[in-house]
Image (cartoon, rainbow over all chains, first blue to last red; front, side):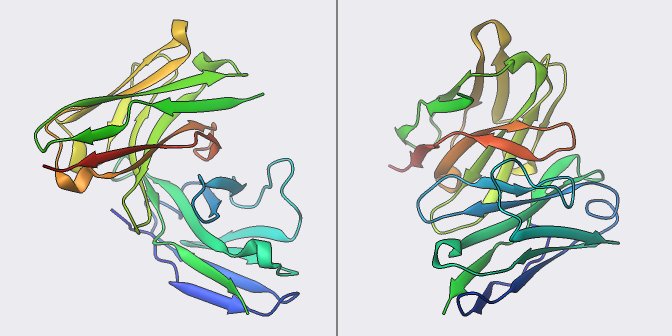
Length: 110
Length: 118
């Protein structure tokens, strides 16, 4: 039930910046909060961003979130090898009465 | 320490049943919505079900409606997922997660693996 679309993969050199887009609709991103999750290999997901642009305690400010209309973006600056992971956006969908995740994006550090 | 620990996964035949448990500690369990999220092998995250703080409201993904039931026991600080009529496509790692007021999931368990196969 992936109604949020993300690019399959993004990559950049260490120290550089990457952005991950998350495209939805008025029933989800357009009218509800967006959250972002990082999943390192073989581990449980971890909350990176909530309420569109807020970071939980302990999440470095290299990670940022934004939302505009029916799309959201996750930015990672100062890319590190430890950032290699899968990243997912998520939002409540009011029409489906369901939480929907994005298709996921694999970040690679060249 | 805020923690969620899942248990109850295993190998089950198609058509069988399984009950997953999630033990919460370190926070006031009865003050939070809770969720189950699953991840099939090599696939992305899929939300499965929600339950309100007092258990009065529940939501399910279409693919499990009528087969899965989300439950909670606030006296035992525990969340459950009763899974019936299991199918091969239910094979996944199942995570329980604490849900914030705005819908994000800020605490996750380590996951429990369910394999549906004959």
